[in-house]
Image (cartoon, rainbow, N blue to C red; front, top):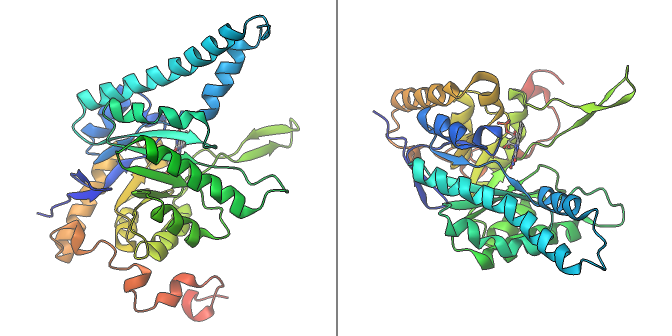
Length: 327
Ligand SMILES: Cc1cc2nc3c(=O)[nH]c(=O)nc-3n(C[C@H](O)[C@H](O)[C@H](O)COP(=O)(O)O)c2cc1C
């Protein structure tokens, strides 16, 4: 029978299927369900840099800052500690109860003071920390390289605080995607998760107001992830983890063939239940047996661009009749 064990960021894992940061990993019950279904690792729901500062300002909103300068500092710090402590308690409990790797996650937009707290994730036993960074490039006066510098700066600042592996979870919107991934790898990201999927606003044309767009991905969204995993997995030292639109065993196998070290699931589990993890593992194991692969390493990255006999096909952006049948 196939051996599904692997490593991600040098962390041993019993299989490459992870549950990504989401409501499924926001509490101990959810985490235990993921482990029971066979997950190889879990990324906890993110602690939000924004959420902490928003709450801090709400708590201190009614104070006269001149008269209560000390109280301001106290409330700001205790509020931050409240969220942080709750989160650290979850990491600690998860480490106590689960036997799979537990990856903490911070959703951040700046290399601000929060980075000084990063070592506390390590102190409570997190196996790694995923930095979910998204800086909306909506300021017309800021050019791309300035924004990218902030990504590198966050990574470097956090890296100074911790010795556990760090991964960076990116969105798909960079004009210099390959360079950004490559620079993050050089700056010491042990893992890079491609891609985060963002909340998309929609408009309600009857009520004439803003509404929420579709929260969950669809399987068709996986193609872009597959392309970038295939393009970059042979190029960088960092381990790549595939996220977005992975709904079944065949999709997971494709990402592993393209070179992803792990595959992360979220929407498919919210939609179809955590039993999907078990189904994907069964598919993977059967497929490996059928293809004569004894270990994940036997085929991991086999179809990445670097090892492809048609490397140019991964960089094709226009439809060509000979390839797709219609044009
Ligand atoms: C309701 C919901 C909450 C999420 N919360 C987080 C989060 O806190 N941190 C994070 O890094 N990603 C978060 N994500 C993104 C997922 O981890 C995942 O990267 C994304 O949904 C794409 O994968 P999927 O197609 O398997 O859903 C969230 C996704 C959903 C649907």
